[in-house]
Image 1 (cartoon, rainbow over the protein chains, first blue to last red):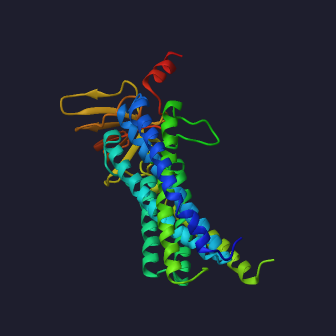
Image 2 (cartoon, rainbow over the protein chains, first blue to last red):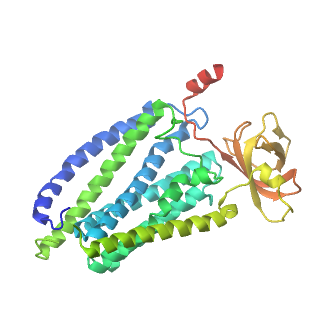
Image 3 (cartoon, chains in turn green, brown):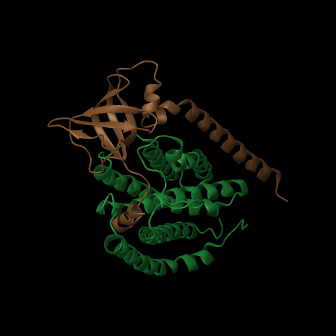
Length: 235
Length: 139
């Protein structure tokens, strides 16, 4: 575990990385979009509206994943007093929020032609809305308590409160009667999605993950520059 | 190895998470009736009294139960144990078909008749191209 780190050393890597990530992102996204919009088949029941899934599901996964990572980093950062982990969390949060909103909006657009409603106060959808609120709380806390010890403590508390919601989102469709259908992709049991649809889904997930990484690098570099400008060689 | 403060902070995190998860679990457990989006026909049958407020009933549309009239559509929601007749006038979503999931929002007339004001189609977690579906049905 590194207690101290040298911003200059990290910056020399992270400042060069974005252009490579951007390059990869554009390639993977083009492949993903071609597969999702042209090559993948229509669904037997939903026909072409199933294509919304290739944006909706990856966005939801990424937003949940980022929140989990943020919580993990904040908890470890809190226990071992690693300031760098808090800055990484702070830089990850904006893309998590964006993808969370994307998941809700595309879900709404998908819901209208399939379910017949834009919005339902169903357990899955409501818990995703709560996650958006936690993301906003988290980012607002950083705005209020600019990079000082108070910000670390408060954002740590917000993540630890918010993480309780994550398993609820995941299992809401299994625990209760919901309008939202249960998960199609299962790690431990057979997935109920045809392989020709799984492939574009995973490619789009990789593209969104790269986009998050890109935004993260940009945000993180800004944080490092701020530290350098303050003349601190270590956090 | 690690200082006393580190151990205390670690203990604090574990304790907080445990408390939060337990609290939320208990709250959700006690609110179960309100968290569910719809009730099944069996749960409707088990009701002790019929309330006037709006509820949602969900299940499968029974095969061969849809009958369209000029202004009205009748069908049966089943959970393969109990059934309930639904009367509805209005537009149904595209995915509303026999043998598929449905959620009806409206009022109970009695335990066997439900006056729906809104019909939502519930689709399942199976995604496949039409050819695969046709191949599956042939088997």
